[in-house]
Image (cartoon, rainbow over all chains, first blue to last red; front, side, top):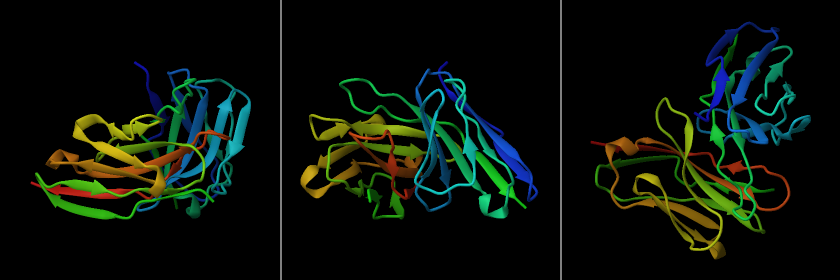
Length: 116
Length: 114
């Protein structure tokens, strides 16, 4: 079944730790995205990728980094977590069908990160 | 800068009431428009999408939205809501040219009272 997965679902860590949030999709989509979502706020795009070895920073400044070595995998890394990184992180993927415009984004369940 | 505005942050309705959620965007070019829904404890999922053609778009679960180009609006409607429609609703815009970035509104939290 085509889907998009994120692990861990919940993470509580101390300041200064390095963490990697995992995201994988089985749909073969070229485009993948990381968003930060806080209650009552819009989804803020922090990173996106057009395909393998292609990554771009989004509109919201972030101290995280991403990599795209395989089509299906788009991990996000925080080298040194801080309390200001506490948020929900959503991963999404999409594709573009010629003649049909942008397709929907498929979202993962999210990772709720708390940095103490 | 491109942006999406959702006017209602919280809406409370009784079952069988009609629903209209506002969405306006700022972008001068051609756009693709989306409404997503997030039920409690679930993923964000697509309700409906507008790409081109008929500006009245029908989605899942009886929802529809109308694209009014002159007003830069894409309002979501449902004639009769159910308790199961309790969720958060997000409007999103993807400019048709340039990057493949989607711009989301702040969301509207809908609570339907049984």
